[in-house]
Image (cartoon, rainbow, N blue to C red; front, side, top):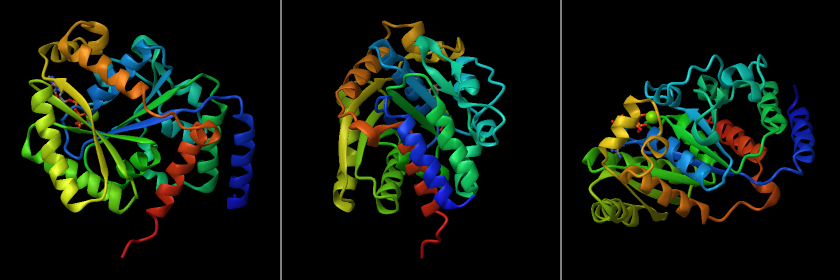
Length: 295
Ligand SMILES: Nc1ncnc2c1ncn2[C@@H]1O[C@H](COP(=O)(O)OP(=O)(O)OP(=O)(O)O)[C@@H](O)[C@H]1O
Ligand SMILES: [Mg+2]
């Protein structure tokens, strides 16, 4: 397929989406593994659903701690089946707690740069054809700064960086911010301090990260808040449930509800630029940019 065909397909998609509302795309990243990205993605999603948002969760983590494992789901298909044209997006979506919609671990997305134009167009159409209301799309990324992770993060409007109180977490968060800023032009980052004793400790962590970014990078870093260390969160993992759902009055659940309220105040993308297919467009542009070797 010629790229002009893709353009035509995209234009058609734009027209068909006119009636849909803008979608807030939030990527959750960290650099270091095991700092709480998946738990934060799921629980922030459930908490946002709790305040009336229609939430879709894209599992873009290829590690072992996937959303489906966390929530005890057994999806038969994932986004790679959509890319291959074997399933529609609607068919692969798995219902999660509080009505959130989960797009299961998408091994195909890792190879975005290798997709043909026809596959790109197919993916865009898959999102265009999705006939369900969505206000927020949360992307749970894998650890590290591999191309796939930075591509997905670049395509989002909001980037949440999760840190915890370990030197490697701060240095890896810094490395992630540096790559996203230097190579991908991302300007603004929202920081969540996870597994801390309280707000104070979280703020100290945020300041630590802020000191290095202020010194070396021209980025804006906002402190979104904290998620305390909470045994109820661990219990909820054992029960394969979201803590916001299983223990709604626990410290962690209350923190997620607070974060959801913060996120609700974020500026919504205006009209057409915020539609889902623009996320896909940005995703494809970002992945194509990575095909060009950087000297
Ligand atoms: N607020 C918390 N309180 C207590 N334990 C937590 C908290 N957040 C995360 N954990 C623990 O950290 C583990 C890793 O969390 P999670 O799987 O969400 O991290 P991740 O960043 O997604 O990891 P990966 O990089 O492997 O994808 C959890 O299984 C849980 O045991
Ligand atoms: Mg994870």
